[in-house]
Amino acid sequence: MAATELRFATPPVRAVELTIFFDAVPLKLVSLTPLVSSLQTKFPHVSERFARMPWINEDAPNTAPAFLEEESERFPFPWLTFKDDQGRAVSFQDDRLLLRWEFETGREYPGFVALRADLGREFQSFVTHAEESTGGSVIVQRVRAEYENSIPERAAWTAAQQSFSVETDAPITPVPGLQAVNSGGLFHFTDDSYVTHVEYAAFSDATDGSLSLRSTTHGDDAVAAFDALDVAHSRLIECFATLTTKEQQEAWGPR
Image (cartoon, one colour):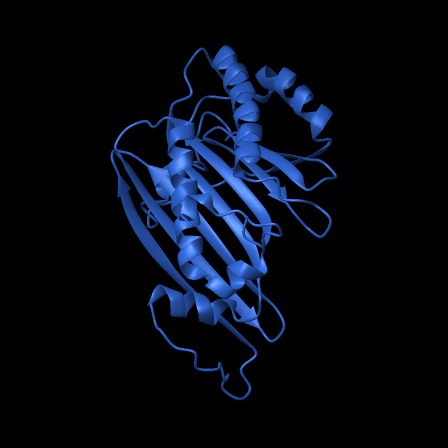
C-alpha cells in the first residue's frame, strides 16, 4: 500500500489544519465587510486577536517582530477566527488563511480531498474580496498541512522506534516513576521545485498517546497553492506511514 493511498475505516485523526501563506496584503476591516458577513453565515462565532508573527520570520527565529513598531503608520490587521458548532473554523490575517477541523467522537473525518475542496472555496472567496479591496494580487509563498492523531499509549516509543528503523519486539518497560514520554523529529524532502519539511511530535502517558505531524512546502519563488498543498499532504502521509506500525494501521481498518 503506497503512503499516498492510505485510507482507514476508523482513522485516528482528531484535528486538521490547512494553511496558505502569502505576501502580506494591506487589508482593512472596513473593506472586508462583505467577506466577514459571508463567513458569519456559516461560522457564527467570531473572535479577534492580535496578529500572529509574520510567517516570513519563521526562517529567522532571532528576528524581532516587525509588526509592532513604535512609529508604525498602520495598526496590524488582526487575527480573525470564525467558528461553527461542528468543529470547523476559518482564520485569516493579512499574510495567511487557515482552515481547522476537529473530529471528536461522533464526527467523521471526510478525508483530505473534501478538506482540500473546503479550503479552496474559502480561499477563493478571500482572494476575491482581498484583491477587490486592495487592488493588488494575493501571491502564495508556502503552504502547510498539520494533523493531530490519537494513537495508543505506545505512540512516543513506536514513533521513535520507527524513525530509526529499529527491528525489535522487545516489550516496553518504562523506568519506575515515569509518567509520560515524548519524541520528535524533522524530515526533509525535495520535489522538483518544491522543498518540504515534515515535523512530528509524539506524546505518550500511561493510558493515551498522540502523534502530530506538520508539513510545510515552499519553493524559491511563489508557488501554486494547491499543487504545493498536495505535495505537503503526500509527504505528511508518507511520514505518518513511516512512524506508525503495521499493527496500528491494521487496527484502523485499511481500505
